Length: 76
Image 1 (tube, rainbow, N blue to C red):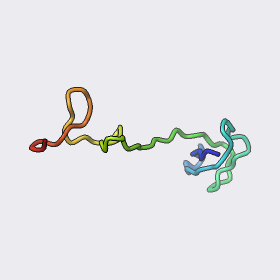
Image 2: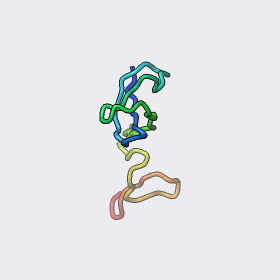
Image 3: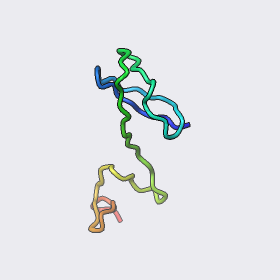
Image 4: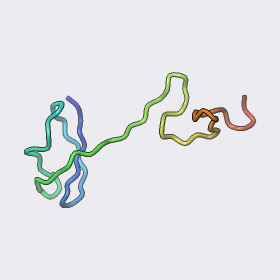
């Protein structure tokens, strides 16, 4: 079962819930204020590339014209 992240629309508290794929927010209660108005959040994640490069969204020391990360100046 996947882990989903929710945010309370009343107090702003963020929490995680382990639930079945496709299951909605029905019946969920904020653990901080007991409100039932919660919204599913879209999480971001990082992943390493197979060639040891930096993951998408990370800062790049030496961007290449094609949009990838190259070696920093002075390195080959």
